Length: 233
Image (cartoon, rainbow, N blue to C red; front, top):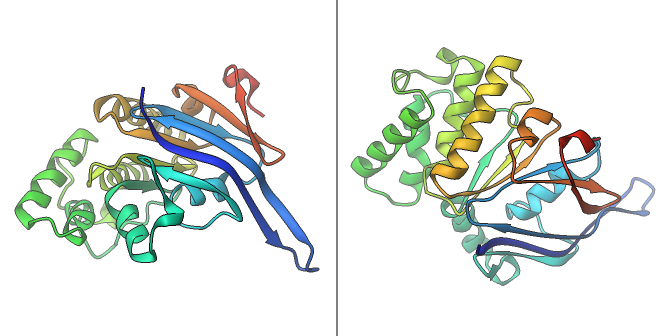
């Protein structure tokens, strides 16, 4: 399988309130193949969200490199990185971040319109994705008219709109009840196979991690393979 996302020797150091350095990541290595579903687990405060931000070009490492499709983020201008985030990466967060004044359909169309896609093509793609996530009958609803589970499924559709190489998700079911969480977990497993999109998910949820091809634990600033969800912290 082809590695689509690669992190090599990632370190992230912050300055504490006393001026002393705090090392959150201390040499993270990660390779993710096309269509692979990887779950990253670990204790609260271990740096999981920090790692996801580095993988998504939302922040820069103190040292080390991230490559997407063989292309290093360090070689890109801020404008190029913005285009990469919009066209080659999809993001799903614990809170859906849908634009409340727009319908579900318009929210999913938005990344395509920003990328310069024709409106008719953007609409067709958005309708197809919303149907895939079970929202065919809810496209004209605004976020306030959708349930929490429906909002998050719309956010997943939006993340897939530009046919990204990788979708990065940070505790995507952390704000949902058990029934909606389970439906979202099934959706993630289905979409990683259906679209052959690499999926990297940070989660505390054993059910979601159990659907992944690999589970990695972030411990002491490094990723450690787990043999199964029973080993989750």
